[in-house]
Length: 130
Image (cartoon, rainbow, N blue to C red; front, side):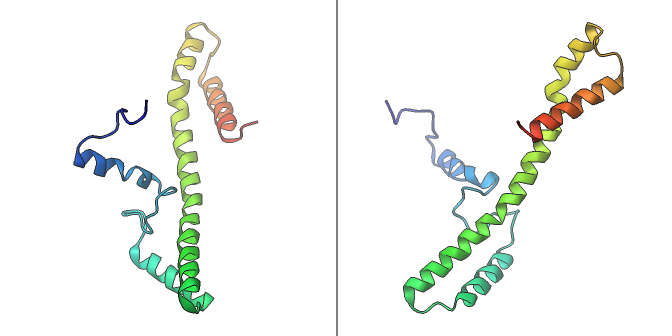
């Protein structure tokens, strides 16, 4: 049965959850993500792009504004991909720690070079999936 989930009940909780997409901005409809983007940069980008289309009439104006917003949002994707890759690489040592401890305990991992090789292989698998 829907509608009886664990979603926020208070106004404060609802306001906080409404900003969940702002963590990376990929799904946000907001043109500017606070602390990540500049409103002045957005405004320059938007006005320059709209002006380059030279819209005539309200429909062309609507389309040029929409194109500007979508193009601005697409510019977020490379930043998001970079942050995800960095986050994944940062997590590798923590993810491998139990395996490395076990390997050391049973004598399969004998030195730091073997540990480093294991981390490098894990990084390659994580970043370049088959």
